[in-house]
Image 1: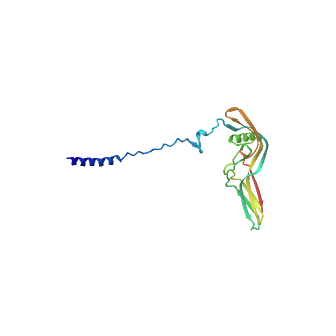
Image 2: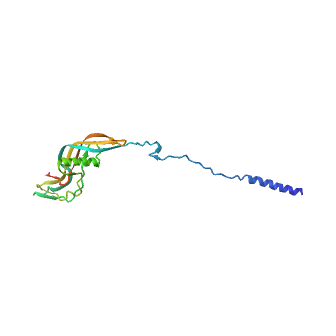
Image 3: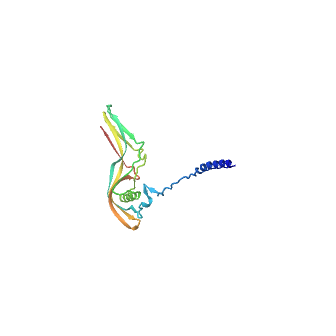
Length: 210
């Protein structure tokens, strides 16, 4: 009877250490710190946003000092005829069948906004008594004609330009701060600009040979 008890106790002692070694596992977690929205790499909370904004320039007036015609303002087209191998004169008769849009030119130390340009044009219209515009449209010169007799043994040329109207004078404009709109800051700026007659196709032509 004693022998059987001893065997039972031995088998129990072998089983207990095996079950204790299987310890439960736990997954670790790391919480990263909060981040702030950035603009160009700078946190938004550190960006200084101005509360007040300067508005302008705003047209206040224009005093023209001159108004002249620029014959060769924008080139339109050139025709060439080679008569160098002929012994008789040749008459070039040309007709413009295509032309590109041509813009105006504005010069001066000011931001020429649409409002500023309109104000200057309006004053020039009143002073000159004719209407003006900023752009010649595509194919506006179609139909313009010309002729030139090229001598024997010469190369002949005919070239067309849009004429421009150039004004020089003093632009008066102002700016203000949104924090105090009633306080206006006026500036007088010398400017010059060249644009076009509105209701008249003003074209200049020149012919030569060499």
